[in-house]
Length: 233
Ligand SMILES: Nc1ncnc2c1ncn2[C@@H]1O[C@H](COP(=O)(O)OP(=O)(O)OP(=O)(O)O)[C@@H](O)[C@H]1O
Ligand SMILES: [Mg+2]
Image (tube, rainbow, N blue to C red):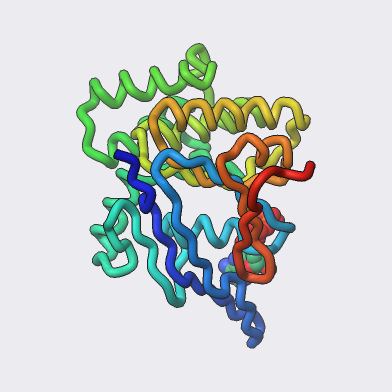
């Protein structure tokens, strides 16, 4: 059965204090996401897209509001349990990759499996298979800073998906990639998440990418709006 309330975001607020000034970035975000949906998140630079992903994933703290994933309210769980839940159920592709420079490609991918308690043989098998799925089967032992931007993106995608999380959060993948390569990598991400039956919240500036999503949301002035019906572009 389709669970059309897989993710519930209720009245999310986040305000930063800087130099004595308050800057409200999220001003009451409310959203329901169904299982298996792909959502494109648009918004100009500084509108709070990364902040929204970070508060959902627990990287950043909320001032107010609830994040409920598959019926579990992460905002009331004790910190340790919330961390364990997120580690199992959420995959994150960071805006700036955040690959660990002292680990090889395959070790970067294996880490989340190790943290989730998989046996060494399963860790090895799953992380190799995921590297192959992103087309880097031959590059397992290379270090991230020796890889091209596009290769690093694919390692970051493999790392986010290797534990088959129900929810994948993908921040805008930056870098020096040309638009065509960037779109190819995003469609690879979408395909892999869809193969796993996962739900994807994807930040993008590309309307071509957004058009392939089930829903398009725009973050502006701390609030979300949804593009309804057929698209004009
Ligand atoms: N830790 C922080 N402390 C203070 N201000 C912050 C912090 N993180 C983000 N901000 C501010 O919050 C606002 C939103 O930032 P955020 O990174 O979420 O934007 P964004 O939409 O992801 O932008 P971009 O498209 O450039 O990545 C910005 O004005 C930023 O300066
Ligand atoms: Mg950002």
